[in-house]
Image (tube, rainbow, N blue to C red; front, side):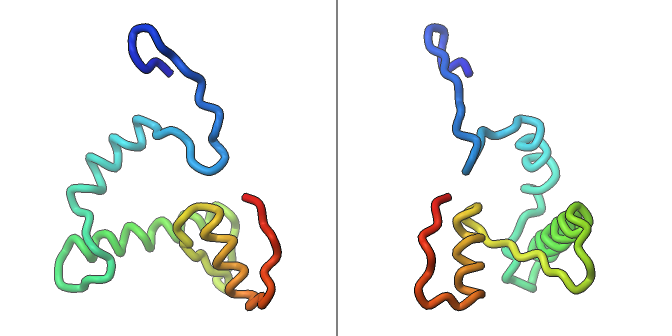
Length: 101
């Protein structure tokens, strides 16, 4: 990746968070952000649209992993670490194991 005319670097830390992809960023800028709103609100059209985006994303993921109607897709936030913490809490582990992510 070129930083300026004289300096370049190679980004190798794609495990937790990678570099942005320009075509995805452009899609979000063009298609999502103009109608993005708070999903916890019910009083405006942007909140409804964002809720629909989230529901659609959940269905895309369910289809992608061949989940059944009995399975749930839970968005955890904070990447893999957030998902592991949610799992540890859901299992009600009193003495959580040491987990390296």
